[in-house]
Length: 466
Image (cartoon, rainbow, N blue to C red):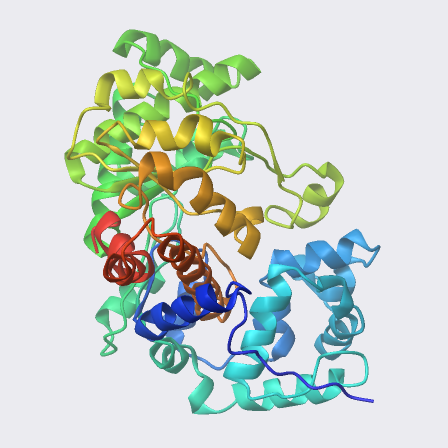
């Protein structure tokens, strides 16, 4: 027997009637604001080519590691889901998701997907084994129509700007195609140099050679290597980038002399460096990237604290980003001091800090961002991009850093249609948080309306220089 799917209009709002009423009023004012999506990992070719998505599995399951990591945790083979280029019947893969949809109860994935099913595709019955084929056919048939092409969906959900993330080795051909097309949707890139700054990144030595070929700089020398970064950053900025992104294992920074850095670079470039040398090189490169950001104006994002590819066997079979990245404890106070000693008081430099270590919110990150002009706090990220995670972030950082040392919300997703779903969750949670402050007479109601708009729209636009 099928069960109804209906999104409650008060979902995620506080349960106390008075506070809920305030949250409703706040949300009504911001629900339809344009979406600023300043950091994410969607595929720019979708918008360059504007071709129909193939089917429900290709659109919703295969790009979303939140989904297949949960299925994998229950013993489901990734090959059966068509992950990592493996052939699999997309309908059969969708049935696996449907039959195991109960695994996602009370998770953010369930909230996001139910929003997509109801709001995007108009489905009013719940996903399960009985409705799997109905879902697959309804979604897949819709995707073959012009109303569901990537650019149309981009416009339908009010996306003002969407940033993707590319390596310095990327030619940015899809972004160039978008810029040269007659479509006025704004899809920009971000400079993610991990493949050429992390000695532990697979193929690092070969990546440096490609880096040299792309830039015409001698990346066998420290000076040439830095010049190659400046040249690629300038190209990314010319194509539309306003930010860089750095996914280092830790937040460690360093401030070596030129000769010290040169010797270290020679060591790691030749594969002769130790694990400590690799960490020191990554640390130095965060400081070098900050120096370049001060020169070229690109906003710097630091995403540390993830033990990436923790499942070595899975990484060897399927590659990166397959749901096996695990949060780690992260130090910021000591780790960032070398960089902040050099650039912390530069008001023209903008560094956005993220964390997977919630214990650092009140102890380290909020006090740092509440003092240094160059620092801002990124929103609750990854495992904490959730209703409870967002509430914890606000409650643990606001009293010290305030609202205006944060940058609103970014969705950081590979799954395109989760963008409006995630922004809706963030807006509802923030309205609930603000409503509680109003109810406790800690914030005036007119101020709450102003802050709600900033959290939903204004802060991200300003922080990412959009």
